[in-house]
Image 1 (spheres, rainbow, N blue to C red):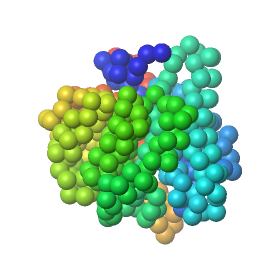
Image 2 (cartoon, helix red, strand yellow; image 1 turned 45 degrees about the vertical axis):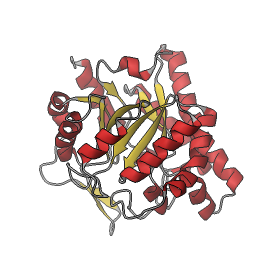
Image 3 (tube, rainbow, N blue to C red; image 1 turned 90 degrees about the vertical axis):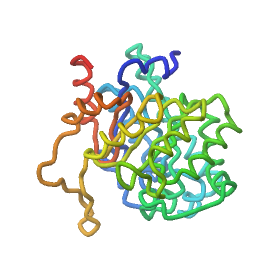
Image 4 (spheres, rainbow, N blue to C red; image 1 turned 90 degrees about the horizontal axis):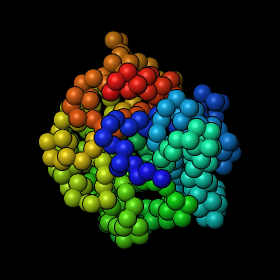
Length: 307
């Protein structure tokens, strides 16, 4: 098995949105558990999404655990035992899809165990505002059960993603250091703008701080508009030489009244930004909300063209 860090001499492609792909398959994610609800009712669809991304060239799959946490499952009628089973199921589904792909193609792909922020559990959009604050012990108490479940099944790396607060990230990294010090992690922030996190911390300070952790192999941003990615990459590159990861959304705008997405006038495809992102120093690329296997396929074709 090749470690993911040995492959980062060239761009690495990760997957796209779980939610959009599930919805295209007919799943209903309009509930507080979001995509985690599908783990209980239609788990085969989660595996199908992972398989779809591998088939179009993704090398890293992110588990369906972003919003899968024990308190959220309990709040929605599941027992604690069921909550742990569903979190482990999410990792198993991703690994099964990966292993089956390897068996068919001979290519070993990677699985990242997703750790969404406390704000995702609140299900009120605060992963984009950072409008909450817990102590280090409280953050770790929240994250420990899910992290323990993910580690019990086993993943290649951990994805500490869509993080609006530096204090929470540091609590998570310290917890990983305690429970599984040899486990590689990447940290991906959400942003208020291209220079700062929602909690007010400058992106440069946040990147420099997490880069001090030896098991953090990449630092970046996700679920931000396409137009903000270049500046974010440039900011991160000024403070660390670790690989930069970015998986933005498609810049679609969500209308809570109609519960639909719309694209602004003059919207450009994700691939049209790739030359400037790679010039700025991007190493790991994928998509977040409203991206699909088609988007990942287009990136894959671009990379095959010589990147």
